[in-house]
Length: 333
Ligand SMILES: NC(=O)c1ccc[n+]([C@@H]2O[C@H](COP(=O)([O-])OP(=O)(O)OC[C@H]3O[C@@H](n4cnc5c(N)ncnc54)[C@H](O)[C@@H]3O)[C@@H](O)[C@H]2O)c1
Ligand SMILES: O=P(O)(O)OC[C@H](O)CO
Image (cartoon, rainbow, N blue to C red):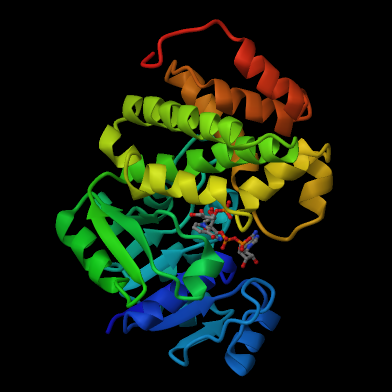
C-alpha cells in the first residue's frame, strides 16, 4: 500500500482516486473548496463532479496541502492545466523530496508552451525520474463506474514507470508503461482540440464520414507535431493517441466534444464557458498547440481552424468548408 496525495477534486482527480483506492492505496484528496472536502468526508460522494458514485472509505479529503502531502510517496496532480503553475508554486516546498509527481492533466501552458511535466520540473526542480504522466481513453464517469479501461503511465525512468503501473493497476483499470512522456502528453492535449472539431461537425448535423475524416486527419496532425518534438510515432497509434482520440470524439460524456457541439450549434465560447463549471482543456490548448506547431514549423490546419472558431473569427460551418477547400496533397504529407 502506498500513500498517495491527489491534488484536484474534480471529475478526474476523484475518479482516479477511486482507481488508486481499488488498487490498494491510501488516498488523500486535496480540494480547493472546503465544502467539497466536507461532502467527501461526510457523505462519501463528490456530487458536483461524479453524482451517484460512492467513494471507498480509504479516500479522505482535506483543504490543507501540508496534511495531504505528509508522508506522500506519490503526488498526483489533477487541476486545470492553466492553473497548475500557480497552485504548484504554493505546494512545492511541502512536497517530500523523494515523492514521484504524476500528471493527469491534458493541456499545454499558454505563453510558455510547456507541457505539464515541464511545468512540474520547472516549479519543483524534480528530475525526469520523479515525474510521470497518465494518459489514455479514460472518461472520468466511466472509470468511476468501474467500467473496464486501459491507459498509459509514462516516465523517462523505466523502474519508476513500472512502479506507477503497479500503483494504479486495479480490477477495472489496466495501465501500460511507457518511456515516451512527450508522446503521451501531446497525444492527450491534442485530442481535446480534435474533439472540439468533431463536436462542431456533430453540432452542424454532419454524420460519421465527417467525424471519421476529422479524427483520422487529426491523428495525422497530432503525430506530425509530436514526432517533430521528439515523440515516438507509435505512441500516437496507442492508448494515449488513437485510443484517447476515439473515446473523446465518440462520447457525449466528453466535455471537449460537447463544447464543440455547442459551437457547431452557434453558441459562442463565452456563452458555453459561462454555462459549465468543468474544464474543456482544448479551448485554451488550441492556442498553445498552434503556437507550438508554428514554432516547430509543423503544418497544423485542424488546430488552426478550431482555434479560429473558438476565438470567434470563423463559424464552424466555414471551418469545415475551408478545411475541404485547401489545396489537395498526398495523404502522407
Ligand atoms: N474528466 C475526465 O474525464 C478526464 C480524464 C483524463 C484527464 N483529464 C484531465 O484532468 C485534468 C483535470 O480535469 P477534470 O476533469 O478533473 O476537471 P474538472 O473541471 O472536473 O475539475 C477541475 C478541478 O480543478 C479545480 N480548480 C478549478 N480552478 C482551479 C484553480 N484555479 N486552482 C485550483 N483548482 C482549481 C476545480 O475546483 C475542480 O476540483 C484536465 O487536464 C483534464 O484534461 C480529465
Ligand atoms: O471530457 P474531456 O473531453 O476532457 O475528455 C476526458 C478524457 O480526457 C478522455 O480520455
